[in-house]
Image 1 (cartoon, rainbow, N blue to C red):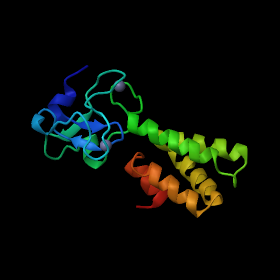
Image 2: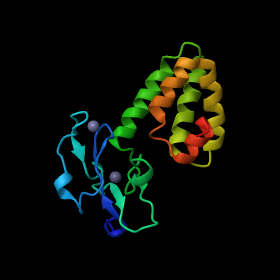
Image 3: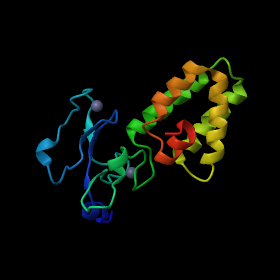
Length: 165
Ligand SMILES: [Zn+2]
Ligand SMILES: [Zn+2]
């Protein structure tokens, strides 16, 4: 591991459900907590797969840390989804599997679109169109549930593509 994170960003402590507990583990270790005060879940400061520290608050004015806008969804060291991302991804899949308004093929397409939206790669634009179409077919209630699950783990750009804000 390089020291890049330590130079530019502090380290963040985040609970397994995704609550930011301490954005400055190095600068303010007194604020560390083994368990989240909001939900009681265990907290982590590094990826559990590769031990790369979770990027925390920015140390350089003008440089935005991945945690400044929202908590990071994927590990910068190995690309694994963080536990809170994986949890929401599984929730979104389960919801998609439950949508009786959609055909089995449409449900698979919807899950694939969710993957592509989270990855925010070259297919995100197309995926957002497909996602909106399928979710509209699934109904208002489903749309609201998907928004609640996904809004905090997709990127700013994807959020704007789907929800326009
Ligand atoms: Zn929590
Ligand atoms: Zn990792």
